Amino acid sequence: MSGTDPDAGVHTDPAALDELTEAAGREHTGVGQDGAVEGYRASRTLRLGVELRRQLKRRRTQLVLGFVVLLPFILVVAFEIGQSSPNRRSGGFVDLATASAPNFVVLALFVAGGFLLPTIVALFFGDTIASEASWSSLKYLLAIPVPRHRVLRQKAVTSGLLSILALVLLPLISLVVGLLWYGAGDAISPTGDAIPFGRSLIVIALSVVYIVIQLAWVAGLALLLSVSTDAPLGAVGGTVLVAILSQILDQITALGGLRDYLPTHYAYAWMDLIATDIDWTNMAAGVLSAVVYGTVLTLLGARRFATKDITS
Image 1 (cartoon, rainbow, N blue to C red):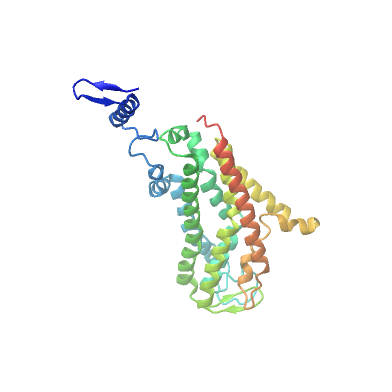
Image 2: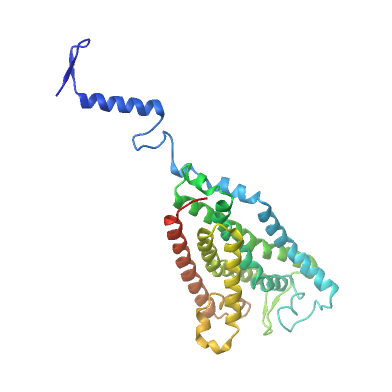
């Protein structure tokens, strides 16, 4: 059916009038055709730079990075107080720490790899979603609205960048401190192999890359626990406890080949790089294990967060 406009003398379609009225209403209220607020773009919400700056301003981030910078100096003081020979050419990694700057970096990674580095990664990833829930700000963040998958992705990427920063900062500061105190000598392995200083820098870089990849399982587990609880301490502590338990079980030789499936079994495989003839077997197995564990745990975390009832 159609009507006639007495002023214009033309026929109008009621459906067309309804569409024009609806469009005018959307223009007046600022609502687009898809029902979203005019100008709203999901890609513009929770920008990575904003979230990264926010996390860098947090006290816990500053304390963690500050301690990472301070650790090499603590080790130097410990060696200065104790008895150490800078010309030592044999012994374990601790005995060889003062032989050269590369050896000092190896020691820093060695002493931090068992507990400190997994704890740092667990802290950054376990605190992602759980902290927002504990502050009762998560539901408001989603009401902006920021899509759930974007919230999880942006916070996970931010946590990953902060973790990598800490993991790179430790050997970098250790190298500078080692150069100042012990000089740019060869990297000496416990087996007596001597690696030139230039090549040792490549070895250190590869070692850091391996450690970053190997700790992917810690990041995945911490993320899963972070979306499963409203207590950041529970997510971080739970991840650290699993890491400690895995290290304890790895020391039980009675488990035999079952230890190969523990996520921490290949944590120190990067030490195979400190040799003139490198065996890549353990490192390849460690990368595969970490990628599998990390991928599965991250996907479980994403699935959990996508279906979780957000109440805080």
